[in-house]
Length: 122
Image 1 (spheres, rainbow, N blue to C red):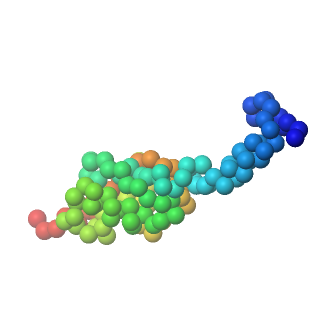
Image 2 (tube, rainbow, N blue to C red):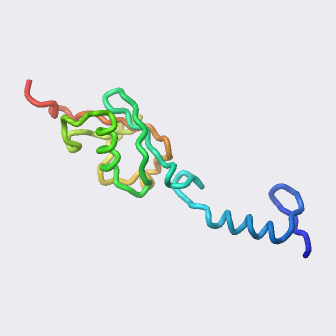
């Protein structure tokens, strides 16, 4: 066999190795966060000042993230529909939106707060 030069590192590797590396990289998952597998995709949700890490899929609706964040922080007194999810800049996100479509990277910080007037009677 003829050796093949690896153009990325300048080293010489056998063709079989080069082909294996190429095939392995071609089969790597491609997510909105680069080559990070979807199983490691999470969002950091701040619920009334308390941070929680919510593992999710970048192609799943944010409604599931809202429900998980509320459960993980024991905020079960109000239904998920009474909460607003926003970015750090204050942009409100729809519960039907998908993190991947919004360009949210794994670990992105979002804020979940009760809607005005959703706290009940005073």
